Length: 420
Length: 72
Figure (spheres, chains in turn green, red):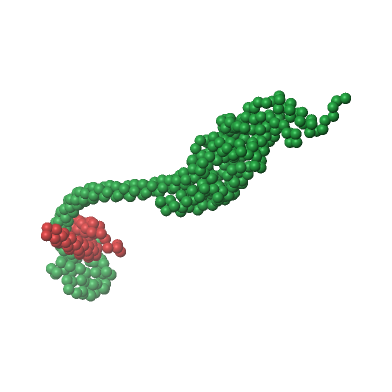
């Protein structure tokens, strides 16, 4: 018959076996599945094959150790010990009669986590690239004058204050319209809250020029949440260019990689925006200057051309005048000649007048001749008239009316005689 | 011929009348009419010539005046 043990006695046996069999410490890798700080740091560690948990165990970092270890780890790895990160740690296996098996973590190697994060980041970037999302936001044209700025940050974050103070107190007096889209910038809630803030910005896109993501700033902080596929995807689909000013020196997060522009600090984000506006203003000044210069050059060119033209015109007018003068002289000559022609014509008319004058019957009548008419027709022979006919005789001055009393044939008109 | 004839037409008619009455035996009745017509045409031509003469002289006078002004 085996010995009957109480549960406590059994657990004492197990504890003794474990203490004896596993006296040393082990170097173990695992992912933190959950983390709870209640004075001591309590964790659940898992080992996964893709999404299937192959192994799971409780672990603890005792409060005294945790105080120094957590700070050392954060400073070295750039992330806080938190759910989702992978760690390489040194631990001993312990068994407690009441609380069972757990790992007592004495040390964590931050370089392993850094490497693991880099691998994870690389995988996310590869996936984004494959899906065509990696450079999507980068392809958006950065506005020439970014003045309406959506800020994703926490209102209590130092980085937000830095950004606002730099924007407000810029030396050029540029005015900005800033709207804060409140989000948790670290911890478990960060991812979901940043995505929600981004979606809010996208909704307000018509009132915004750019989105700036700024984090607490100062010292090393947890950048873990910025290596997020989901945030990167939201940035990729944003119609607004995103500036990431997460504020860290060492690593480039996924959010940095997919943003339109990455700067190191919130202050640098403000400087970038101000510089862009200044660049635009300078460009305008330069344009205005070259416009003025160009116009003045054009004016002087025109003036020169005009003076040249006016000289040419003067010359050509002079030439034209000379030609015209020549034409006029010809015309005047023609006129003078026409006077001679008129004189000649008057002479010709006079000669015709005299021709006509000789033939004019009036001139014949003047010399004493007369014309005798019967019924308005001149009588040239006595055979034209009968005794008793009424005749009219035209003299040089006046007319005679007569009646034929007798006819007598005179000589010199034999033809007429024989007809009688 | 209702319309006043042109100088050219008038002078041609005058020439033709003179030629006709000098070289042909023209009846005295017709002759009177021809002479009347020729006298009318000669008068018309003289008027036209005088008018033209005046106008030409006027233009020449203007021109001489203009030339003098230009010289001043």
